[in-house]
Amino acid sequence: MASKPKHSLSLRALSKRYGSVAAIDNVTLDVAPGGFLSLLGPSGSGKTSILMAIAGFVQPDTGDILLDGARINDLPPEKRNFGVVFQGYALFPHMTVRANVGYPLLVRGVTRSEIEQRVKRTLDLVQLGALADRLPRQLSGGQQQRVALARALVFEPALVLLDEPLSALDKKLRGELQTELKALHARLGLTFIFVTHDQEEAMAMSDRIVILRDGEVVQAGSPVELYDRPINRFVADFLGRATFLEGTVEACNGAAFTLKVNESRIVIAASSISPRLGERITLALRPERIRFVNGKKLNPEWNRIAGTVISAAFTGRQHSYLIETPLGSLTMLTPSFGHGTPRAVGSDVAVEWPPDAAIPVKE
Ligand code: ADP
Ligand code: MG
Image (cartoon, rainbow, N blue to C red; front, top):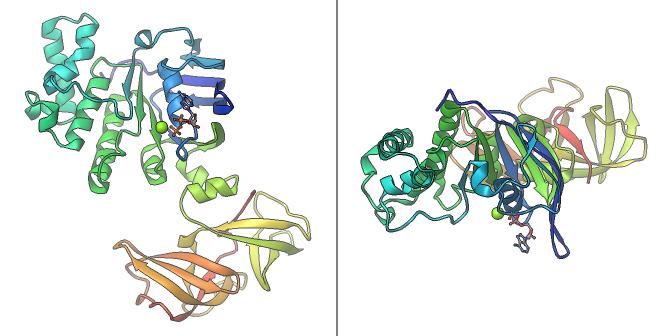
């Protein structure tokens, strides 16, 4: 399988309307050969519609679907040779695991002995070799998902399309299957398009994420690019957590500018935008960039503010706090190890963050 040629997929200005709803609104995107691209967005943002159009089950109104640069809009689904795992796309209940996985080969007229070999190889790949003779109802949810995945991979598809394949699973199993799926992708070298509404899942799995809202692409990039340089408040809010501060630009000295938020002032590194004096802007402050004041300022430009802890939660990895300050309520995350004693609700504290921690975002 690993020696198969890799395939690229592109969408060019793809649109699909249902009455007054634009399910897909002028979507252009590219998936590199062997890439792992996630479509990420809230419910109703058009993720499934895009995947269905790529698979050939939804006919777009306008725009092109290109496989290795060739237009495939008019190719029927079975001729596209894509492996699909759709939401609620069930296994055949009366067929064993072996028969379920062999089915795509059977309909393609592959010989019995070849089917036997390829089913065995694929079941081993998803670690289900020992369960080949079971029926779907004799499997756990995670095992059933792996069978569905094996069925999508067994015929060595040009492209693998997965629509929220892990969303019905509990959190721990989900994490395990994310890791397995990513390892499988690396081993097979196939091109994957993965749909999820879970930002952590998208970040953990993808080399590229396309963020969707109301059928439109809001921003596309690597997980790090999107996290560090969200183009607007929607992306900053959807990917990770952030406190949003709105204020008026008071002074600008080239390297940094001062923003008046309520009656307080904070300093922000002059970054990608160059604001005008008097302009109102919004900043996203990532919770892990804020820390409790611990001694002298390392840099006079660091922002410091006093506040009160109004909520505190411990999740094992980290402490999560909400700190009431004159700027507003700041969300703050600190690693659970090496950051002093946890602060209790009601404590008076002082927090600080560097001038480059706040990201200017458009509304
Ligand atoms: P997502 O997968 O991101 O939740 P969908 O692609 O399922 O989003 O849906 C996008 C929008 O298109 C939604 O407003 C949905 O109601 C609408 N839609 C999707 N499929 C149909 C359909 N067959 N008929 C009418 N509206 C649809
Ligand atoms: Mg969907």
